[in-house]
Image 1 (cartoon, rainbow, N blue to C red):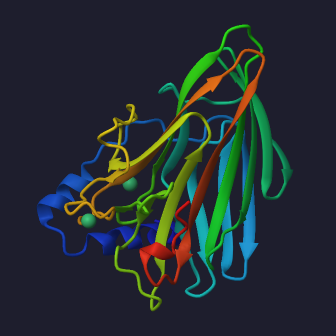
Image 2 (tube, rainbow, N blue to C red):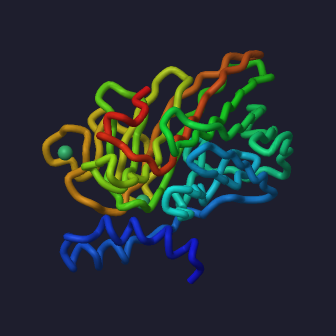
Length: 276
Ligand SMILES: [Ca+2]
Ligand SMILES: [Ca+2]
């Protein structure tokens, strides 16, 4: 086991402290049958900040596995993501090529059925010290003579603990390493925002293989949230699913943005994380 792997598992183990042996056994038995990206050629996006560095290896459809964060303060590299993909009507895509234009930028294009998709990806420094943001802009163009409707879902399985968190009236869904942050220690997190299209919904589900449409009742909920405050009350393997429905007019195009915020920061509270 490499040091990097070891560091990645540490917050997971810490997050499970205090849980029952039954829960631990169930957690260990979780199946992760969805194909783990990336698929095909990749671009290695990197970014540095006063707090450290980040690196995400993306494919041409914007899928990725690890999101590595090195933090100067404790000299640790932690993997903030296990798997992240964008599904078109429930189907994942690979792409034959991706062009890396700068150390933190990539560009690609591909087709999904009748749609021509142009993707720009950029990894930037986030708002919080220790945070980074991967912004992926998908432009869906419809050269045909009939409108095209497609359901998009950004799925992210990150193994940080796992607690879910959604800021009230916000757009982000988060997986966090703990729910009682203190500036005394670093809290790990990954958050996903999906915007564009006519209807956006968000949920943090139990892991792992559920990429079905989000129901109205499920929208804006977090698994294991017993009191309905948008924060999980139990640590369990979870995954973020954020969804939107896009209607692309004949001869027109629509932009959809996915923002994945991730890092390890000295937080006062979960409310310090970006909400919208
Ligand atoms: Ca709760
Ligand atoms: Ca997970």
